[in-house]
Image (cartoon, rainbow over all chains, first blue to last red; front, side, top):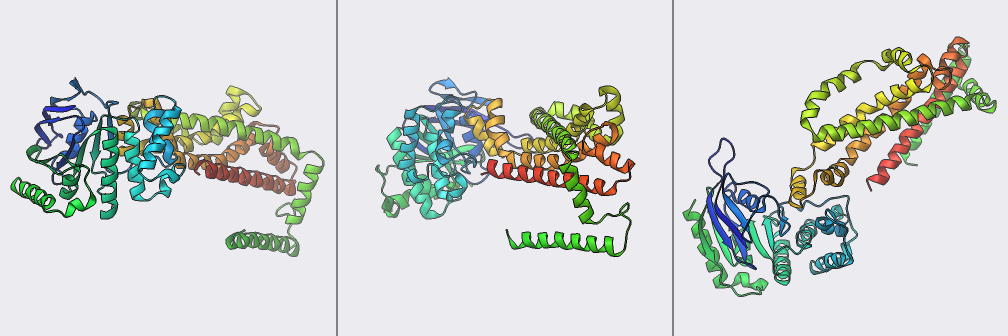
Length: 245
Length: 245
């Protein structure tokens, strides 16, 4: 699916923010990338998305070099980034309507995604009328409307309260499982990473410093967060982050 | 009407009453300050005799043409300069200089080039309306949220799509504010243009009334210009509300 080979990126006047990163993701896998602020994880995600170009190394999607954003990738930004002048439905359909007229099946799929997110009644509302959590759900639906095999997510739930965040994590897992999408999810929340991921990788000073395989069963119920195994994985991750500080 | 609206109306009526009392009580010459009653009589007679109508239509036509032309060119110029920074750096000094030159000083030149009649007045009006639209559109183009631009890049939108589906809708409040300013200035442009080189129109009528020392008619024409200017501003406010819904 996604491969990064010796990817390196430097902002002028600074040490490399991404420094020789190797990464490979399998289809259907959910990977989380954790690290402290400024460790380079958002830059790495943008390099993977083709929004930025590595100064060395290469990014491959299905064995093809990624030189620019690819239709097989969806991206969810830190802010929901919805267009206030469009309805919720039109926001979800934007990735399609930028390239062609939406067909009845596209509209049906958009409605289906909104229904999965519990937003059916809000399809004709404008984004400013929605809560922060609802806006994040719309952003996820927009990223998934083209059924991309790979979804890249940059701390999309960071600004939400804890309960809304947990609800959104469950929604994300359900929708991605239904569509079979792979996810590369950047977060600084270790519990979120363990709950979502098959594999959590720790990044520090531009390098991948280690990883934790999450062997928790799927589907994952909410009360999984209170099990000893979940806490042990969080502790292991925390110890790894302290180690690479 | 809101309380502040009623207060505003009462204030206007009080000023008119005070003006009427001062003009009649102090026995001021109607050449200097005609009372409102005399102005209204001149206005009534002007419309009843059919004398004012063609002048109003002439100025209205020049305002509509000048405002339309100037606003369209200002908008397109703002979009173009917002998109091409190189062109902006080369052209902006000349555009600013073109606005610094007083339009009244340009009028005789325009008459030499374009002849008497409506054309130089339309050109002056367009020149005046051009700049607010150019500046506001340019500002709007330059201040689009970078994350939204990144979203459009991720969705592989073309430059054209980014302009018309992101930058222009996002900049609508600023662009419409420019239109509101321009429509008021359009009346200034048209009337000033008619002062110099026109035989028809409200500006020409003011000059004619001054020549025949018909001060009530001058005031009557000022009332017409004020009412029409106010109405066009309100039309822009209504347009703005409907477009920003």
